[in-house]
Length: 580
Image (cartoon, rainbow, N blue to C red):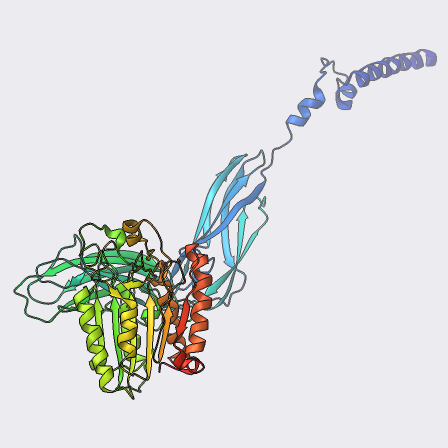
């Protein structure tokens, strides 16, 4: 019996081991299945199915983070709307559940900065993204410092993104100040203001304050009776103006012949979002004001600018802040002539024959003669677009006045306009506006002017000639009628005379377009402005020659070399003369 029992136990064991070996090699059954003794079908892909059943997870990240602000200076300024924007991406396969954005300041002592702290994004399936914007506002009490933002993207089960940190500089409130920086009245054809004809006012608006101005609005109003706007609009919305920014506006108007005043006022109202940082200005143009077409500065702009940028202007810097010397010279006489508009008086000429900025040159020189050189108004004679008869008359008048006080007399003669030489004799002429370049019979011979003034016996005679005598002119206008340049004859100067000339030989006297002056006149006035007239002729001559010769090449790509001629009588002394 014992042997029989032992035999029945050994047989199943062998079968068990055999089946176990086969199933392990085939990978078809688990140990539990084999040990249960149940028969299972063979499953070759068992391990692959086990991998696909692993649970898929989310993976959140923050990308494309960016800070933007209204004025684009990358600060949170007081009273400014800003934002932080970024993208939340789930780059995993699983769903990110109940995603929230949480923002807070790492430094809690920041004042005046508000923002939205929490945003719900909901569930985010795998491989999806969402755009997020966090609005930020700088209040009026924002102070200089930093706002250190921490931005968290949180998932319900803890599958959070790595936090994002932003450190943004904050700025305190800086007041804007919107002003009329400069203004120009002009007529279409130049000359005096006329009732019943259009008058244009061009103003230059500038924010000279320390901060940005918002909702800027400019309103033009005619306050006098019988005055009428001609522009389509009297109100302009300029909206946002950064500090230092400028905007140009034009306002066209007229006054009827019933107008009874001596000047026409225009009220310019400036407003902005705060209602307190716009400066209203009343501009007025006199009915007897002699304007040039398009470019004559009549109203001087505000002279106090913010410290780190220049006050904008519609005119040259030498036309503003002209020094005032309190010393007057009762026997100093000045004749100032600016001949610009030749085409108006000569039908055969076009506008290219005109001398750009000659009237502006003469007008500014007149101001310097009065304020810096101490010429009294009664001794100051000023002509623009002068005819031959007008020039002859004033030259004769100033010669007679100087002769009456010869021992004390000083004469200053300034001319901006065309000069031409006679083709045969090569003698240089000053050209009145009614004299043709092809017929010099009525032109003013320069040698005659020298002779007439030197015969007065004046103790000092100074010429400033912003004209060339080769036939070129500022725009080569009269040269077109001539078709050839002529090297002018060197005229001998006599008496106590010094002559500052804008150019040499066959060179042209050129404009400085950015400054709306002749190149020679600009640097002459610039040095008088800088020195307040307390400068010797020698130093003035060196400055003008050096700067004109360099800047003419740089700006006009042409040579222009000023010269100084002196009479024998003052050689050795003239360099010590001064104009103040």
